[in-house]
Amino acid sequence: MAMALRVEASYDDGRTWTTAHTKAHGDLGFRAELTTPAQRRTWVTLHVTASDSTGNTVRQTVQRAYAVHR
Image 1 (cartoon, rainbow, N blue to C red):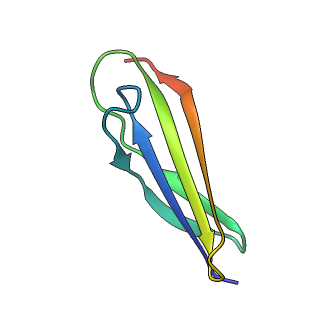
Image 2 (image 1 turned 90 degrees about the horizontal axis):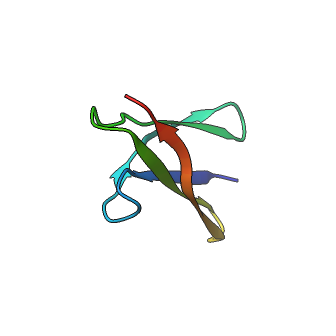
Image 3 (image 1 turned 120 degrees about the horizontal axis):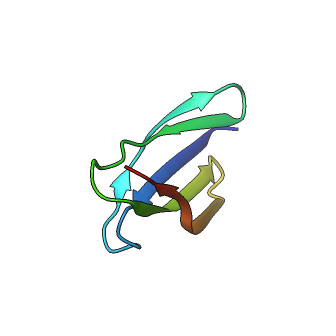
């Protein structure tokens, strides 16, 4: 069964979103690469959307998933 994944990150509590580069990792895994802005300390909020070839979709939002300290 084919799967698709989309990862988005927000550095301003969800006002704007950046799409991460995703890549399959193994049979059922994915990796997402984000480039955090070179700015002040901030929190990162994540949207992750996964779907399969039969039309099932799940979306999860993790508010303030982790902090960036620069």
